[in-house]
Length: 145
Image (cartoon, rainbow, N blue to C red; front, top):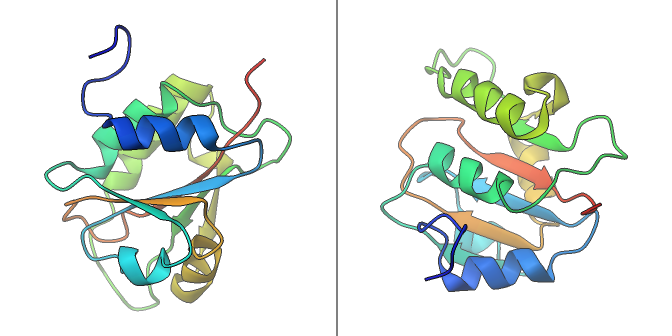
């Protein structure tokens, strides 16, 4: 155990976050996301039993978002005609505002397959047990000042 680090952060994720540089991206994926196949060329960190909001909050307590791009966060937008509940985005808005001072106005909404293509470029993918649909998030790491 380390002081000041959220206890849900496993050692492997702490290592990954330390290794990431400015502009690297990390995906926090819901339970339906194809983490292993999309993350084939990335580091996949399994965090089964946890949801995206608690992991998002923990990760943002350790890394800044890229301050040199307008939208350092990407979310998977709903597929046209899908009426899935996306109330989890309101939770993300609060977490982002608390951590970075900006909420979802700092987020790109990417079409599903566009999101997958961006996720394939990520340094790492965190696989969660999140049951909410469209709960996937990509974060672009900034500089620690």
